[in-house]
Length: 264
Image 1 (tube, helix red, strand yellow):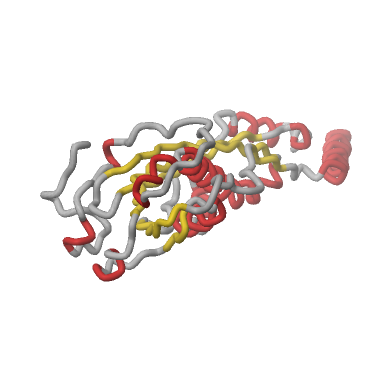
Image 2: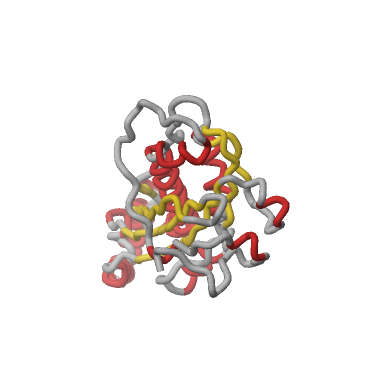
């Protein structure tokens, strides 16, 4: 009888704590910027085509069960997100996405952007001890326990001129952390993957804007007098496919096996 009363008291105490706190706080950091950087001067008179083969990013590595299911059910159109962000920078006069692998269309493209992307999920390494403690103590610690998962998004871009030669390469990584309580776990896994991609897109677009002078010669325009705040990283070898690949009728967006360039 006494044990039953103690259990009931603990249960109602836990219920009161849940009612007061909700156990559903969620904070995801960093957040993407509210606006894209704006390129100085008039847009470069170039028509840019974005050729991303995998427009919807695959489910990330890591995680298990319900978490993986929630992330896999929410594919992210990285191509559309990148195209929209690039248009808002006013860097290029025209941005086409998706571009058709039609020779007549590609002949009118001045710059082609290709890319490789990936995602990864890392659960809180202390998740199981925290979950055990919460259950063992009849959920009493739940209002005070927070979980910390991280989500990575990576992107490698290759900027190619009309002949298929590499102009510039960029490689960026974005990592966001979801700080959540037990009742906001579902929300964290639905929101954080998309936010990590938005942060990645913002970093890639910012790198292009800061490297505006590298593209000015393609149109014959003089580069802006404003100095970029930083230079983009060197081209990743894996991105430099080289060759006038669209003139050879490749439908996959990749150059034929015999084609190559200096990066190889």
